[in-house]
Length: 422
Image (tube, rainbow, N blue to C red):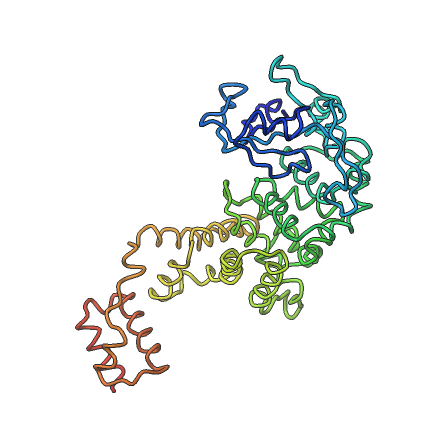
């Protein structure tokens, strides 16, 4: 209902009813009782789901049908200890999280059923819990992160007593599973309002609980000639504003963590320095990805973004072979997007970005990753014994090939005989 009132296209439609799960399953035999104990049944949707308006047409594999209920007790801070089915929508919405999520639509009359003041809070642009905020957050601690995400996404304010409750209970976010925290943070980073989300996380006290490494960036000065915008925290949050939309999850996290190694490597010599911050940052980012249980593939790409973000500074001085190897990094477009955002949130010098982008556009894929001219069998035939030397020779041949000095296999074999006599 919230999205319809805001003029947005809903991602899906959920149904609330006084019918119990057995009654729903009797009406729709082909159902998925994914949460019947909580009154939730998935009903397979037809190929084209009905729409409230022409603009709101939606397709879905299933519609979630939930029985009106009230929840009793949340001893684990997530699931109700007991569910009691009810007959009224008023009782059902009273257990929900925020007023903007507590409105219903009568599909027959088309009337908005608003028992919690959700329409007024939409008008006031406020995120407010339904009922006592500490009670709502005590039921499910993740709601504190959701309050921040909704406020950032819609550019709303968090109602004062709701925000105060988050500040009071922020430490309790630690009981939430790391996967749920990760997913909520990912949504904040990829929905287009990451800077505001992380400002709210910081002000609410949640940031130092879920990502103390990012909180540690506050107050860490940077050389003003390179970073006139301010400290590492200011720079990182500004960078989030310059990410492309839609933003890949790995790029968003790579952007957040690209300078995570700066606080522990900060020192002042002749000027402010962060010696080794990339290597330190890769190790810290790996620990964060492990803690938040990212997949191996996701972790690998996030670490690659952190590891390579400083290489653009040397791009104009790279040998042709080095530049082409750089361009063939997996999902290079993410590296390029991170560098652009990094520049726009600091000195705004896009010279290296424009140079690399032009090279990428001018260079054919087969020139970036050409078929090898020689292989191990060729080296054995030339009299070399298998061993570590093989890799050195093959790398040298590849570099010469990438630089255009070896136009053919015969030229490559001659190069091996001349430069690496057996």
